[in-house]
Image (cartoon, rainbow, N blue to C red; front, side, top):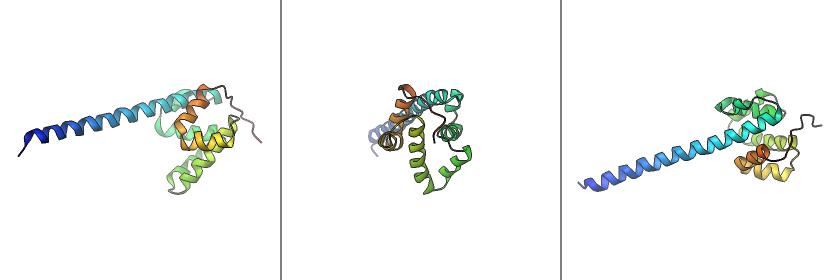
Length: 128
């Protein structure tokens, strides 16, 4: 039995899983910071962006839907469709176009949330 190969394989596995955890936490923190800014622009408490399930509920509320609509994320195919509707509605609330909503709020949501949170877009509560 070659103990060196086994030891190096274990080290590589630990390093890979540690990297995944650190990268996942970094992405989560960046998203939470972006949602914090979006929530404060919308008049909600920004600290709600840190709490994992609550942040989705309040993002749905900021988009203009009822908080109960966030339950659509639990339905397998409906969550995909509801995510598109949510992206368009959120973009509309911040005065963004449909192209912005589709590409940056749905496909590349982290980038879109950062643009909404830190950009010059203002929240409009009264959309027709």
